[in-house]
Image (cartoon, rainbow, N blue to C red; front, side, top):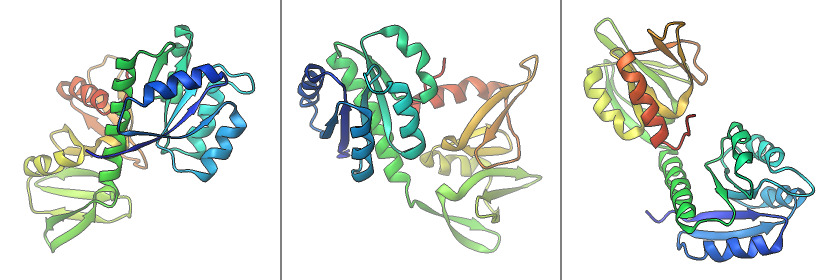
Length: 247
């Protein structure tokens, strides 16, 4: 895996910037493309540069790190964030901004390596999925489908259908069991005996009042997807492996 990470480091204390730069030099897959000491410089830099990751100090004089992270989330959704702080208690309030990790000053080199490796894995996965196409046998022949266009697969009676965000619906000739094996390489998960869904399109998971049954809500999908009780824990473990922290 040769994926190089472009990193912007942000801290309003020069000594902290220098220490962080020195630590990052240990990692051959990291390129520090910029540094900033205030919010205005961060915004200006992101407008003109391609960044994979921002290492962001939470406490700065001109703008709070959480507020800046909120802006980055909206304006640059592909940019990942790792918070850096001198106060552990601040981490409890920051997970709504979906950081990859929190690192506490002075930053431990092993913890930094773990966080950067997770970022690299996620960046590589996103890059490899872009433009991915797959050939699927349908009743009409062979269809070439963009994997990112697939919302979910559903078994209806004895046939399996692919539902796409383009509005297209394809009737397949293969069994859902065989398709589960095929789509495992594309990060799909079988939530139920009749459904196969892409992990990265999961929006939420819900339980009924007595936690006897579960459902999954997907992005851009109105239909509620059933989640088998025996699959609930397994799905949470898969989400964690995909870099999603669950508390």
